[in-house]
Image (tube, rainbow, N blue to C red; front, side, top):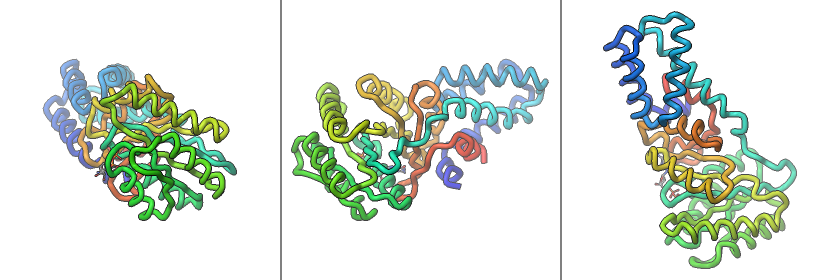
Length: 301
Ligand code: GDP
């Protein structure tokens, strides 16, 4: 259900164009595939992914002896799902049962990092876990207050220091607080300015070192938050972050606000990082674990 409503814009755009293509061509031929290729690329599916998808489609069409374009849509959804499922194995979060789980959130400003932390805090609370938030973005004006708003909304405490203080010191405090309160999950915000990439990456490494030192095998997840509405820009952010820090998963936000939901396929297929969660709205329960089958179902309804 969530995927169905959340993917409305992508579906309307993609399926609308798809139907138009099918109506115009009737016959499955080389020209049809060429236009389908263009359509997929314009939906931000990503060139390499589109190429593989089209190859798979052509094989299947030959195999099943499909001649009419009206028969092709189920084959497309099948092949899309196959492509997504291939990469899906490690989509779940690395949760430490019976011990503290530390999750670090990285990503540039405005992508929905704070919102995602709030939503995830809510999710863990619903599962009966105790949650703490660490206000590690001490740089952006208002970041701490915004996290506190989410903390209040969801009913979890935020460990913070003054704006401008050392994020590594905030993390140290937060880890100590989480230990003494026996928290199940510690969700850590970080600064997201990419203008000064070298400093940002140094800061991230320092924050990570503090966490590594204080909690065994932590951080258990480093989640990169990306904004789906930025399309290929999200891809390049993913590449930049993964070059400098170990990203264990992606949260793709604002899928509800874009017609370019195809970006999920590009990210999953072209980067070696699983999309673990997707944001499908601004409310606290608008966060969904990524599921290939549901995604493709939501895409075609
Ligand atoms: P941050 O700077 O990365 O912490 O970004 P914020 O969490 O402040 O989010 C920026 C804006 O995006 C806010 O207006 C959020 O409400 C909005 N936002 C975040 N996630 C989603 C989502 O999944 N869907 C929609 N429609 N809006 C979102």
